[in-house]
Length: 558
Image 1 (cartoon, helix red, strand yellow):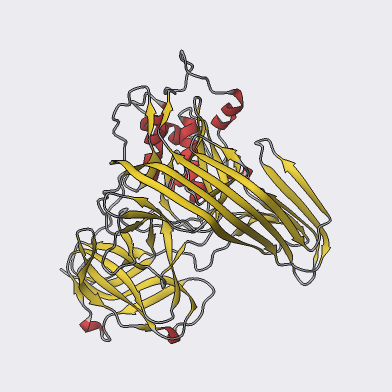
Image 2 (cartoon, rainbow, N blue to C red; image 1 turned 120 degrees about the vertical axis):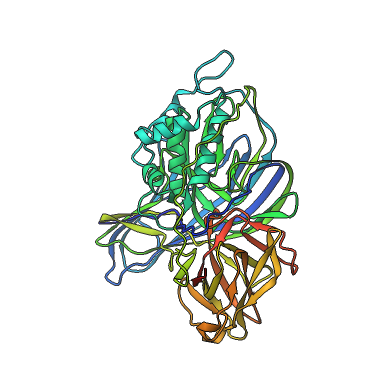
């Protein structure tokens, strides 16, 4: 039998120009009410020689209610083609429901279609917690329940007993008097010191701490390990996310929240007085977005992933998710803004009865690259992206497969909105070429080009340069993502020079181009305000919670 594992999406980050960030914690209030029709199509490509046996074990969406999020699953229906030999429902030690389906002697492709309606209500109101830190029994304070104490245990992916994890956790929570304060100090450090990367070789907390990179599993595992090391119960959550953007109000404009459609992991933190509360280490505290659908919980990712067994060989796996929003009622208002962390984090208000001291969170100094020498060719940007997204992987023995929760993160950039990505240079740059990581879905007539314009008060300005057009009929179809090159002159000696400062790359198009531009969640390249979009010319009021993949080639001048 053979084995494959599906990984959570990740993105490698390469920072050339250190940028001072002015992002913050956005405190919201209001309600989000959603009703979504979801169709999940999972399939296996059976080899021509057939399979003697295929066993697929997959999670079912779950109804639940927390202090901020309520999810109700309605009309969950499954269909199979071909008809399986058996279907069993399993409930594990964490209360997760898995469907285990077995096929015998099959020669045709296998398809599993799940259809359901999800009703979600997210209520962002002020929470009150009296939980102290450390979580020791005090007069009038509820103790951690016995069944929740298991979520203090270390695992191979959440090494809460690792000496460096323990030392970091202890440093981060110094001075905290309430559980809420300790949790925020840990999670703010994670969001400021881990950058999103695609297809990391490992998902454990120590690897994430060592490299400062990882996907949603890495973010969750490091967060959970640090919380457990501090004596705070935390567990991983598995589910799917939907890629419909939604807006968060700011003082001037909006922050556009977007996430890829597919598998995702986040976490929940246990408060003795208010129960399990959801956090997404990359996006939000105390709640998760109206695009998160919860399926499973566990000690680490091994407890939440789908898996399959096959004999004599493991077939390729594919998953497609479609969502139709029957109701998408988002009514939010901005209550307050705090100065931490450096990336945007969304939350609702929480009041801890114990006073919270202001604690300076230690920061890891990131090495600054040496400036390149004059007229030496340089290449920088947000450059690492997967040409193809593979949502499963193999174990060494190739005997079993697991979902990885990887998913495509790309923006459809030839529709209503115009998109811009910022970069900063500290010396004059003779620019040779700019490449964007994109995928052509359709279109023959027309062209693409980019404008590179100076920053004007934190937004794209009007002064800059324009590239030659890239004609659509010269762009070949490719199954995944590749660099699309944009040049500004025909001869290298004539390349334009950009003076030191901040610039915006704006993608333009004409006629019938259908193009996706790959992005990495979490603004990994520069600061949290370095991607914007507009639907009305020069407004640029929409701030995006991700960075596009781009590559700038040229030479710095003295």
